[in-house]
Amino acid sequence: MIWPPIWSGYARIYAFTITWRWLPPAAIRRRRCWRCISPTPGQWREHHLAPRQAAFIASHLQSLHAALAERGIPLWVEEADDFTASVERLADFCQQHQVSHLFYNYQYEFNERQRDAAVENTLRDVICQGFDDSVLLPPGSVLTGGGEMYKVFTPFKNAFIRRLRDGLPACVAAPKPRQAPARQAPPLLSLTTPQTPFDGLLFAADEKTALARLRAFCQQAAADYEGQRDFPAVEGTSRLSPCLAIGVLSPASACIVC
Image (cartoon, rainbow, N blue to C red; front, side, top):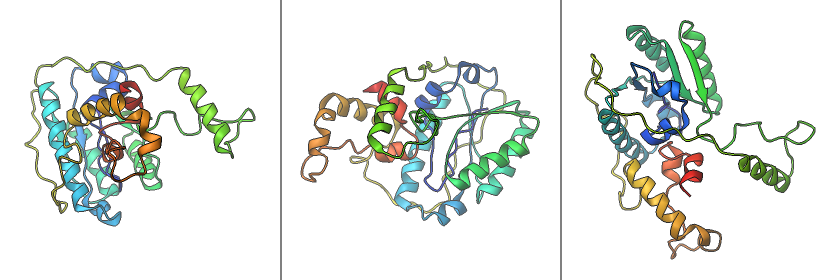
């Protein structure tokens, strides 16, 4: 089972293309494969999630649901009030569906790390494997010759770029459509979190639109970004930061596309 988190205070949801690209082939070729997402409205309230951001997440969740359905992969939404409750819901789901493997993407905030540790401690009979999808390089992987964190930005930047030149993670193709599972996921329900409509002309409402805008920005405007980004009257930015914030796009995918 692939378990991308959609529950943090910053509401990360991993969309279809990015998830397949950065999970190993073993994860996406399993005979039975589910996606399980656990929104946590109570946790979101504690982090003051904006209603407009909730609507943005809901839009991408609908897009993800449709993309997975085309591949014969059901998307289960197990809503829980907070992180603690989401661990219990996930454990019940794994037991009910006899899940043997759980693949998920790391989040590095304190509450999220506690949640993920609780998941792995609870799922004793499930093989859990996490991935650094939301960053270009794993935290702590760029160190000085003495094995310490950099204290000055420029040497860190140079070391970071050298590591990137060694190669990005391999890009895995999306799986071929598979036969629909015997047990289908229930219909996708609306999130209970309050929502306010967002402007789809300003912010990409689905992953395909986000990828198209990323390609266009890389081809047309990225070269002038440094000189034009601070002028409101100029279309000097990509407006894709919301997609990066919730995981629809990842830094690694942006490097591949650009």
